Image (cartoon, rainbow, N blue to C red; front, side, top):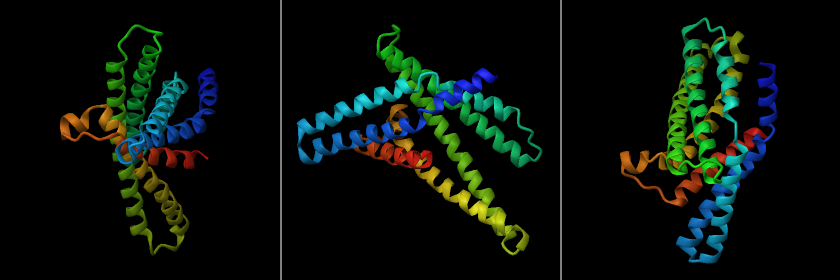
Length: 229
């Protein structure tokens, strides 16, 4: 386990760099769409298209073996001693979210290895599987985030007149601020995940353009970069 811990810490050093690249990736995707659709500047639009594709591929390579991070988190969560039903539900949702993300990274890694011709598999179905697991992970994370907000609001409401719980209330209020940012980030990520998994076009009959996808990813990336700073 010590080897796994050391490996995960080493991979995490690239996390901040990945978030900056995410801002560049989706910001470029939005500008690519905007310049082509609203300005008619095909040349500049193509330049941002190249930047979008390059940062997208670079991030995929950064994420090789990132499933180890999720495996470590799952092992840690399983080992937790949860006494109350509320803690057990929180742990179960967290483990489930990390399992979906593990599968997302796994298929995402296979997809990029296929794209660079390291393997002979077709990258398109692998990428669709990756995006599907990402979408499921986001939905599970959304449920968990809303659960945390509800729990915090209930605690604040029940203890607002309890002078001995004022510090805990202040802590819950500060935690809610982070949870609000997470909600915005989640809805931003739903744009590329929902389109890439084909949930939006096939189930909801909504086909998002590059502008919406780019804006959603840009907002999510900006929040993630802020939180990682």
